[in-house]
Length: 208
Image 1 (cartoon, one colour):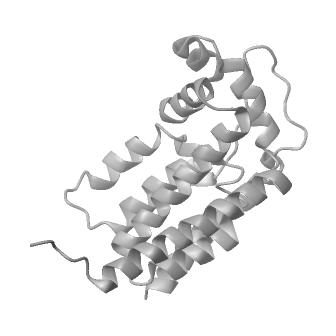
Image 2 (cartoon, one colour):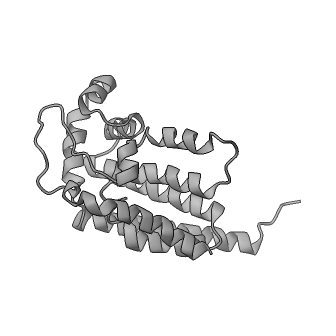
């Protein structure tokens, strides 16, 4: 007999599709209007396109996981699409984590997108990826005494420990220039620590 999908499950899937569609639209709008780091990542992508991965790694000194995305995707997509897909990947993973661990995942995700997407996912794409690991490690029940150590080390493949602790932005050092961006989010480093803890606190308050 053909197995029927429960109506509740259908509604949940439709809600997830709708929520991710809204997030995708918001991210597209933010990248085109308020993103301060978009052009800086364009510079990085132009510099690594067509170069050897390890040459790019030793020059940029970016985290392996983040650099792999920034180096691989430009072979298939434009600069803007590359940044957009990385931001969308970050939002999708966060949505999946919220659905798995929180009692009110849609509300938590919606408030996250409205409050923090313009700071994190539309600008700090490396930190946005690492924040997915932070959320997962905080929400999941520890399975061993090395649980947090493992996920802390894993997160360094996406963003450095300093960035996770202080949300600090390191301006891109390209293969051809060492110019420091003049309109970068690095000018607002002091506010990033509070933004991180506010985002974590927001999700916990929603779920309690």
